[in-house]
Length: 145
Image 1: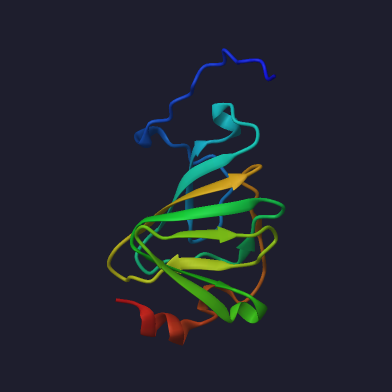
Image 2: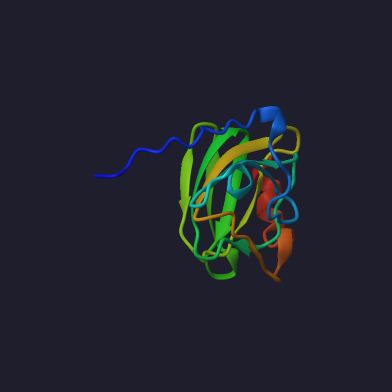
């Protein structure tokens, strides 16, 4: 039997999310739950891409990542030469396995993209060199609104 804990529940208000977390150019991560709030085996936060903004290539090391789109339209490129992709809209979930390089971004030139990300064990971010956000520039332009 596991002993019950008397540790306090920690609240992070939406207006108080922290920017002191690992970042990738083009995707702004805001920490809600993580080491700074007392968590030791999970990171959860809000990620924002401005209209038309795309992240640089990156992966999340050993971390498993779950994402949920709150608003906007997202595309995530992955695979050999970032040639595969998935598109997501509000209400969609995705799972990104450990060590999978990807580029994520906002398919709209006018609306922001906002999603929730949960990662375990922590917000591991490994930024990569590579083709950058223009890897599929023609495809991106064709898919944007």
